[in-house]
Length: 502
Image (cartoon, rainbow, N blue to C red; front, side, top):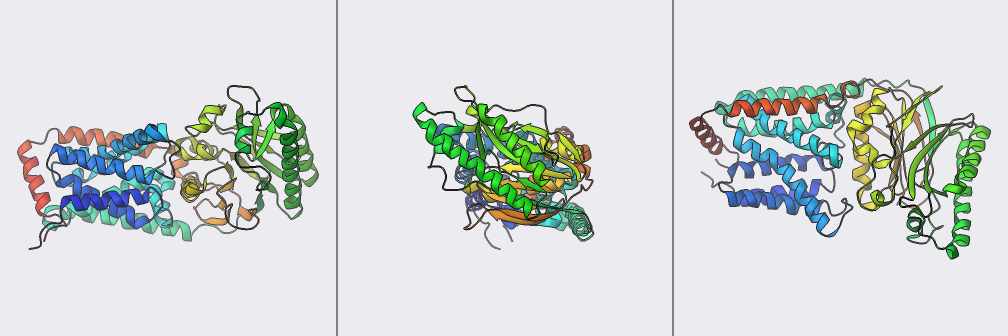
């Protein structure tokens, strides 16, 4: 007989894996994190150990969020502690409520995990969902077209728990067999969905362009965006803004003459003072009409002297030269942007065009799956997404937006000011990518098939997540009727059949 692995070691391993997957998507490591953390949570035997479990999660998120959370000081540590508490709740519920070894009991943890992720996402965005760790596993990612990212989180948690409870077949082989069959069916269906994807759709040549990197001094664009300019700054700033405007007009004309039919500018990449906006928009309208192209312009309109000087918006100009759609960002990022931005209202709107239905949003808006479903429900054929992110999160943030394409069955063109510009098809396949931080011209050009793919998620939205919440309530009500003696017997049987003992 081999001695059991110490619980503290398993917990530390789980915390290390959890910290890693909050910085980079490594699919197998996410599964290992669940293995270790579930074993630890089911093995601890005192209140002090439970507090230690929570502290490990807090430390993991303090490390894991270091590059992605735009906060500092006590606010940073407070947010990490809050997120750790939310993530710990499903483990606590599983320990208290999973009193038997049957199929119903294997559902409690995945139901609780989905409920925690979903309810948190309505306030804090979906950042940190376990589903995002599976980026790159395309057959599994297709599950998002049915139940959103919540279905992927559920399957991950259910597979892990059924495997652990079913390790001793005499005690729980049936749950393992059921979950294994469902998981295999999900992967097979996802693979078939990819294989059978049509390849004969009409395509549009699309280009994304970026500003010149050497035009502004460090911090200068921030000062302009905040409206913090003294009169002595105006002559220099006015000259730089004129050069910036000319750059975008000239480079858009270049891409139009190279064959692009839609040209996308990144989020807040074009700075313009409110009083100068009409003149610049008129220039852009003339360009669109002369070259017969769509212009999707990420713009920052600055209201000098106002308490909220920053209007972050997307203007879509059609080939006839008309401003056909104006969208103002509705979800500011906490901290700096939220302190200066005028949030928009009214949701995502769609432009019916000859080539298909076009809609768009801006950066952080796409981190809210329920919000983005507006585009899927409106049968969008092409979604435009200007973004502006920092280097440390460019891969994570891009990967999150790939799931939005799958959920809503729509191609996405992502134009990044600092980050990854990309073209993504409705199945989550990346057609083209350009890294702002790589040497050379960051312009991205792609032939993007236009047209939506109907998905269940676009039709019913977060119904799966709400069903998980309802299911959790029912499971907890059922668990409350189980006698304590049966709970003790089941708990002892579970510990005796653990993977960590022989």
